[in-house]
Length: 150
Image (cartoon, rainbow, N blue to C red; front, side):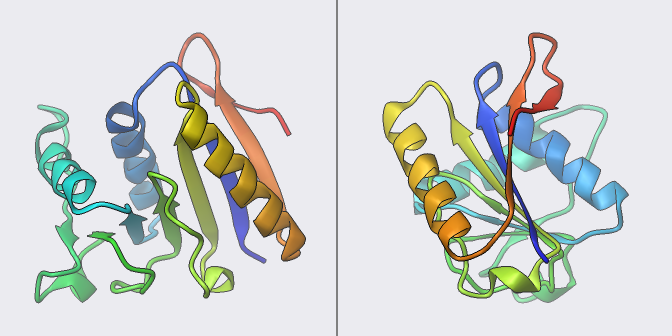
């Protein structure tokens, strides 16, 4: 069964948390897909993943690239799985894909300082639980480490 993790971002923005989570996914040998809901966010993430750290490099592309199937990380606006990813990151309130069960893990990342984002995450939690999925809720502590809360 697909693991579904809700990550409540309070102490770090998405731009700080997502690259580290993607690195952890790649360390596990997983391919990843990141789904956003706006072309602007997708372009911003695409740019950011090239430059987020002087010490690290995250190979990635958008699903518009001809070699997307070969890339370890693909950014998309759609619900397809262009690179046969094991893990899918949902940002900006992106909906869970119809084929959620085809992933080892879904990660719902939401801004805990944004009331609309909180409301969307609560709604997603209810929908996924109603569909029979197990979900866990994670929150950052004061040091930026993730703690399971529910």
